[in-house]
Length: 489
Image (cartoon, rainbow, N blue to C red; front, side, top):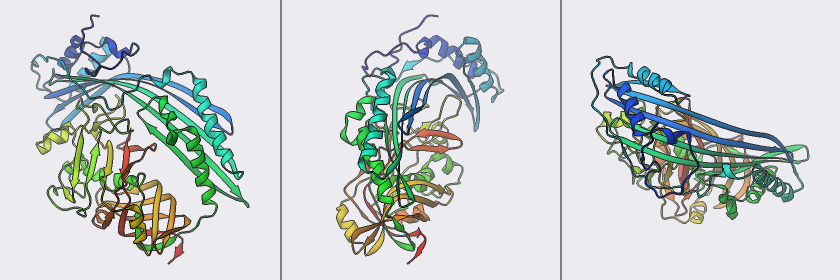
């Protein structure tokens, strides 16, 4: 096999990496596969090669319970003709299997014909997550030491901590995307995920707390004071101990202040999915046919940005071969755009926005979020809290349920406080926020200047596919959300 030089690192000037199974994929192979994919009359085809290596470490009660290492390799072939899609994949990169996948995907079309030759050219990519060395190259003992540091810090925080679990997951993913319009893009995508869970016990009562961080880093991220194992251990313990004294949450409509960072999960779920173009193409989103209309308070500017340095949802290139982009979706309350993939952008007569993403080579790309957030406002966070007579301050979220067609949501809070006379008072338990995403955006009355992008371990699910994402928001005051608690007002 002759390998031609395609500047496969995307001409980013990155340091050479160890040999990869994808290094053997050259222009001749790609052109032959694309010809087979288009051989039955397809209008467009793309090839998605993926090599992924990862490891997991889990410590429970001071002992390593799980150490895992996995590798996946494969090719996905997609063919488009009109509104129809043909897709096939193979886990074996032999000429026979790859051609078989290409011909299987080609069966979506049946008009025959000879496709024109494709001249492959590399796409020059940015580098939003330069990592000098993959964490996988570091001995496992060094990673176990990180878990032990987190465990020790959590236990030292308070004598009431009775159980600690710490985990670390690392991944090195390489993708190579080649399209029938001649583009070739290759990217190397690191990922670190770290988490600590602690349980506190007092008087027969047990409460839990969790802290974690994730992003496109190497192990150097743990040198940061706010992301050290000790910081996460202490934070998990603080939350667990604090919940021992939590009181029953009030119930009913009231003012709610969303804290910076993690509150972006409400934005992601209740609003972000409705701005993905496929839901609007199919007319199942609450935002269908509303481009140019006011859909939120004039304070609200919502952005999806795949270019944030080292963020969990950032991408140098999406899974259709388009560079990561910053896209304004709602500008001062006016809906100005959707997140587009190849198929939806053709329907809307626009260009892909760098949001075509997939879980792996086994999946077709869909329009997906990257890092989605509310831009900063001008209010001081303390003034926002001070303006509330009685309400709830929401700081940390867990799971939730959202109806994308109308934006109705229910979210559970893992850290929240009662606001009384402009001050945070008692920690609350059993808090749910119940409302409607578009309605909440219209009720934003104050917006802080303290924007934060959460560094949590956020993963988004859609159509059975999971992808890493980022979320963020400044402190935000909502005039009214229904609080689902256990105590009548």
